[in-house]
Image (cartoon, rainbow over all chains, first blue to last red; front, side):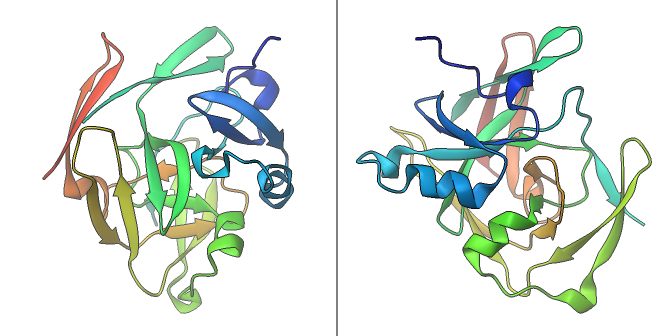
Length: 63
Length: 134
């Protein structure tokens, strides 16, 4: 089974749940993702990320 | 502490960016971007629906992103806890104000009360970052 890279273009715009650096679930909404993982026995080992759109540039300042 | 950069797709293939795992008021974020160009830490509003933090709406600010788009973000009323953990190291903890924004595309760690609390060395060539509490 191929495990998708967390910050892959397929995950762009999605929330991703991962364990040990590998994706376990994804969803467009955080609430839905949390429901997907809440009953996992390894829930305490799960981390969450929001994957930005492709070609993302950060940096922002108050105006 | 030392963390590997995170691999990310972009149009010309793959890029490696400096991120670190951060636990914000108990919520584990796996790869928060070290955004030295950001004034503040900005988190997607959806996370606050989970955390239930009180926001200071009267202190909402407008921000301009790298591409010139303007968006608004709301600060927390109280400082929240940042916690960074790594096996074999004492956790690094501090408190700071964060901002929440609807539609925020990812988790960005900015300078105000976040990166200004840390000493971070970026080693782009080796795709690693080194972190100590300032």
